[in-house]
Length: 256
Image (tube, rainbow, N blue to C red; front, side):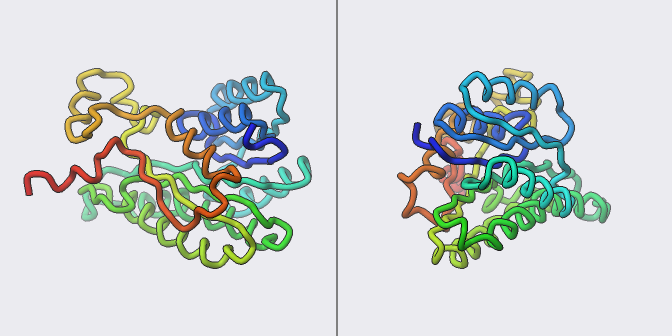
């Protein structure tokens, strides 16, 4: 019960990493506002699990790329629970997977607004309440693509690189209030963003060739780190990205 008495706000809690974090937080004693965009079935599953733990839950439908929707959702959570102690910026979209020369401006804009602006909107909301939110935790779900470039994914790579520097800057600004800000950078995790790997053993094996541990990760493994970073055990931890990639990043230079 490391999060007993805490209130968490989790975006993208209808599937994958966000759902796993919301469930893990409830199991650790937190009450939770869970946000989703379109997967009603998935958010109902998350809500049902949280209720079974005996924790309180608030379901909110939002588009995280829209400023007013993010602010209104956080206001609702604060009004409902009386506070927000833990902010999980998880919702994101994948890149367009096209070379820059063929990329439409709207494609680039969608990825940046969803993956970067959403974190700006939510973090600013909490920063404006920094004095009253002393000891709060902000955790962004980033990616190994903070550092690893992938051709044809300039929009996604740019978004995650921005999240890295935004997190580091916010860690400096909010440290005087005891508010910590960190990123978790997953590698290949079996979530809907890697649907092909979830559906096909051969795809999983092919994509795992460069992962020293030899397999993709599971959402619950990310959630366990998110529990630590949200707990008092991590009060002295801020301004860092914690990569969970099975050793992928340290293996990228082999054969050079």
